[in-house]
Length: 463
Image 1: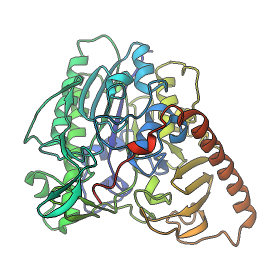
Image 2 (image 1 turned 135 degrees about the vertical axis):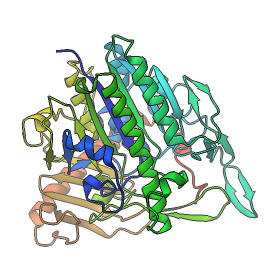
Image 3 (image 1 turned 180 degrees about the vertical axis):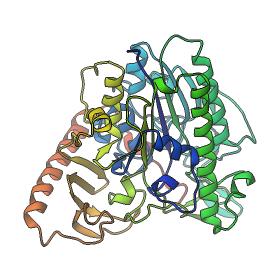
Image 4 (image 1 turned 120 degrees about the vertical axis):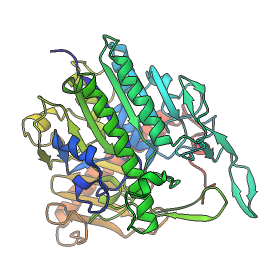
């Protein structure tokens, strides 16, 4: 059997219920709905971090963030290091094995030379390196930490243009970023038809991450929604259209049946308040995690359980709803297995979930783990334990110890810690032992390689 093409679509800060196939009644996502119908809708799919940079590091490396050397949101300065090339990535391994590799969209794994997409095995590249940019000017409003005054308000950050193609800075002022990403992705698929190599296509959209920008065409699709929700649904709709164009091109080039596609969000919906253009405080509250508790930055389900879709016609049965727990770290071993490639020597936390997708097998995970600041969480089967869990950033912990039975209560409304002390003890030991190992490797292995790591963590210029 020929090696498959591999496609990964990633949305940014999209909530668990922000797809119509996930239960939303106000956003319409026909192309992603069709992708889910052609394969499997993953109801218990997780990001490996509740924030951008670590989540993406896990997806590309198959490692928990602390084992990949990236544990925090990184700034977008042009001197910011990030994911080190000593860590094998899906792109570097597949390219070495003969795949053509393309990245189109958001990187956020290091903006300095030596840490950019082309340094991690991506051959065809277009997008930006920071965590967010203006959707029309493609400017990152946090280029350094100097304090400036904008419209009479003090803020920090010097605007820096951030759009690149093939390692060279390019200017597309006035073009809506989501549509640009779609254009370049479609061009890549067309170019691959004259190449006898299979391809890896990584498309991490910026949508629907702030700033909240969308063409009127998309806002007009949702005329009756409140402003915050209208702009959010418009941004998601634009992204859905871009995904639809890519899928249509795969069909047009007669390679869809030879292509395994995955879609997910990098973390839960934002509840952030940020300074963006004029120094004013702007809340970004338009996303929805549905019945799930918590948001971006939280280790409750709303921060880490995300929309998940996987499709491979003829290999993954269509029309499935898979409710076994799995996570972004599983993409690395699963895609490599699908391509018939042995992972290189090195640490891998993810597991191959192809049996779960094709044969109805249970999740191969004994447990899944998370960390964010002083929060730690573990899910084992039906049980989920969260230590020092917060709903949003900079909030006081809800409870020091929170135990939920996700089978009966996926919204984590009832704390069962007092009624199930033995389960708490077992899961707490598991979580704390894992966290101790992360901290030890961080101190002994990663910090000596990046001694100034703290200076490259996302600054407070937007707060």
